[in-house]
Image (cartoon, rainbow, N blue to C red):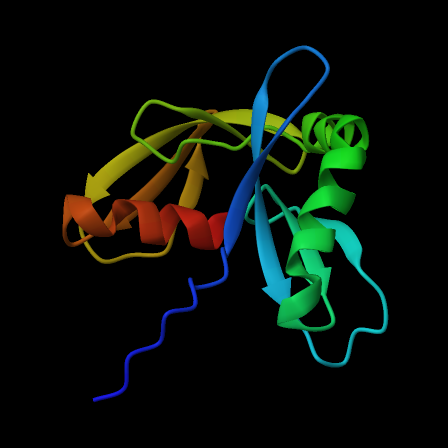
Length: 133
Protein backbone atom coordinates (compact mmCIF):
# COMPACT_ATOMS: atom_id res chain seq x y z
CA UNK A 1 0.00 0.00 0.00
CA UNK A 2 1.37 3.37 -1.01
CA UNK A 3 0.95 6.48 1.10
CA UNK A 4 0.44 9.70 -0.81
CA UNK A 5 0.94 12.79 1.34
CA UNK A 6 -0.35 15.17 -1.31
CA UNK A 7 -3.80 16.56 -0.64
CA UNK A 8 -6.39 15.68 -3.29
CA UNK A 9 -7.24 18.47 -5.70
CA UNK A 10 -10.60 20.15 -4.98
CA UNK A 11 -13.36 19.37 -7.46
CA UNK A 12 -15.60 22.18 -6.29
CA UNK A 13 -15.16 25.61 -4.77
CA UNK A 14 -17.34 28.55 -3.81
CA UNK A 15 -17.04 32.13 -4.94
CA UNK A 16 -18.55 35.20 -3.33
CA UNK A 17 -20.42 37.81 -5.35
CA UNK A 18 -20.49 41.55 -4.66
CA UNK A 19 -23.83 41.25 -2.81
CA UNK A 20 -22.45 38.51 -0.51
CA UNK A 21 -24.05 35.47 -2.14
CA UNK A 22 -21.91 32.35 -2.39
CA UNK A 23 -22.04 30.41 -5.64
CA UNK A 24 -20.66 26.90 -6.16
CA UNK A 25 -18.22 26.41 -9.04
CA UNK A 26 -17.30 22.95 -10.31
CA UNK A 27 -13.60 22.54 -11.15
CA UNK A 28 -12.80 20.26 -14.10
CA UNK A 29 -9.54 19.16 -15.73
CA UNK A 30 -9.72 18.75 -19.50
CA UNK A 31 -6.41 17.86 -21.11
CA UNK A 32 -7.67 19.10 -24.49
CA UNK A 33 -8.20 22.60 -23.09
CA UNK A 34 -5.50 25.11 -23.95
CA UNK A 35 -6.60 27.83 -21.52
CA UNK A 36 -8.50 28.21 -18.28
CA UNK A 37 -12.18 28.96 -18.97
CA UNK A 38 -15.49 29.39 -17.18
CA UNK A 39 -18.86 28.36 -18.61
CA UNK A 40 -22.43 27.90 -17.40
CA UNK A 41 -24.14 24.51 -17.64
CA UNK A 42 -27.83 25.42 -18.10
CA UNK A 43 -29.06 21.88 -17.46
CA UNK A 44 -27.42 21.54 -14.06
CA UNK A 45 -27.62 25.28 -13.35
CA UNK A 46 -23.98 25.49 -12.29
CA UNK A 47 -20.75 27.24 -13.24
CA UNK A 48 -17.87 25.09 -14.47
CA UNK A 49 -14.25 26.24 -14.45
CA UNK A 50 -12.06 24.18 -16.79
CA UNK A 51 -8.29 23.88 -16.49
CA UNK A 52 -5.88 22.17 -18.90
CA UNK A 53 -4.10 20.30 -16.06
CA UNK A 54 -4.35 19.68 -12.32
CA UNK A 55 -1.64 22.20 -11.68
CA UNK A 56 -3.86 24.95 -13.17
CA UNK A 57 -6.91 24.20 -10.97
CA UNK A 58 -5.98 26.92 -8.48
CA UNK A 59 -5.75 29.41 -11.36
CA UNK A 60 -9.16 28.20 -12.63
CA UNK A 61 -10.69 28.87 -9.19
CA UNK A 62 -9.18 32.37 -9.13
CA UNK A 63 -10.36 33.00 -12.69
CA UNK A 64 -13.92 32.05 -11.69
CA UNK A 65 -13.73 34.30 -8.61
CA UNK A 66 -12.73 37.23 -10.83
CA UNK A 67 -15.81 36.63 -12.94
CA UNK A 68 -18.25 36.16 -10.05
CA UNK A 69 -20.48 38.98 -11.29
CA UNK A 70 -20.74 37.46 -14.77
CA UNK A 71 -21.49 34.01 -13.31
CA UNK A 72 -24.24 35.39 -11.05
CA UNK A 73 -25.75 37.34 -13.96
CA UNK A 74 -25.75 34.33 -16.31
CA UNK A 75 -27.25 32.03 -13.66
CA UNK A 76 -30.02 34.55 -12.97
CA UNK A 77 -30.84 34.68 -16.71
CA UNK A 78 -31.63 30.94 -16.81
CA UNK A 79 -35.34 30.10 -16.83
CA UNK A 80 -36.83 28.88 -13.59
CA UNK A 81 -37.29 25.14 -13.26
CA UNK A 82 -40.73 23.54 -13.24
CA UNK A 83 -41.81 21.19 -10.47
CA UNK A 84 -43.50 18.16 -11.99
CA UNK A 85 -45.93 17.42 -9.19
CA UNK A 86 -49.70 16.93 -9.31
CA UNK A 87 -51.42 20.30 -9.31
CA UNK A 88 -48.43 22.21 -10.70
CA UNK A 89 -48.99 24.53 -13.65
CA UNK A 90 -46.71 23.81 -16.59
CA UNK A 91 -46.50 25.53 -19.97
CA UNK A 92 -47.25 23.38 -22.99
CA UNK A 93 -47.11 25.05 -26.40
CA UNK A 94 -47.26 28.47 -24.72
CA UNK A 95 -50.36 27.75 -22.59
CA UNK A 96 -50.32 26.92 -18.87
CA UNK A 97 -51.94 23.60 -17.98
CA UNK A 98 -52.56 22.02 -14.61
CA UNK A 99 -50.65 18.76 -14.26
CA UNK A 100 -52.91 15.88 -13.18
CA UNK A 101 -51.87 12.34 -12.21
CA UNK A 102 -54.11 9.48 -13.28
CA UNK A 103 -53.58 5.81 -12.46
CA UNK A 104 -53.27 3.74 -15.62
CA UNK A 105 -51.25 3.07 -18.74
CA UNK A 106 -52.18 5.44 -21.51
CA UNK A 107 -50.68 8.26 -23.50
CA UNK A 108 -50.62 11.69 -21.86
CA UNK A 109 -53.39 13.99 -23.07
CA UNK A 110 -54.80 17.49 -22.70
CA UNK A 111 -58.36 17.77 -21.37
CA UNK A 112 -60.10 21.05 -20.49
CA UNK A 113 -56.90 22.94 -19.71
CA UNK A 114 -55.47 20.02 -17.74
CA UNK A 115 -52.49 17.93 -18.72
CA UNK A 116 -53.37 14.36 -17.71
CA UNK A 117 -50.33 12.10 -17.31
CA UNK A 118 -51.31 8.48 -16.64
CA UNK A 119 -48.77 6.26 -14.89
CA UNK A 120 -49.07 2.83 -13.23
CA UNK A 121 -47.44 4.20 -10.09
CA UNK A 122 -47.35 7.68 -8.58
CA UNK A 123 -43.53 7.46 -8.45
CA UNK A 124 -43.49 7.15 -12.24
CA UNK A 125 -45.65 10.24 -12.61
CA UNK A 126 -42.65 12.58 -12.82
CA UNK A 127 -41.03 10.43 -15.51
CA UNK A 128 -44.20 10.36 -17.62
CA UNK A 129 -44.83 14.09 -17.26
CA UNK A 130 -41.18 14.94 -18.03
CA UNK A 131 -41.57 13.18 -21.39
CA UNK A 132 -44.28 15.69 -22.29
CA UNK A 133 -42.10 18.77 -21.86
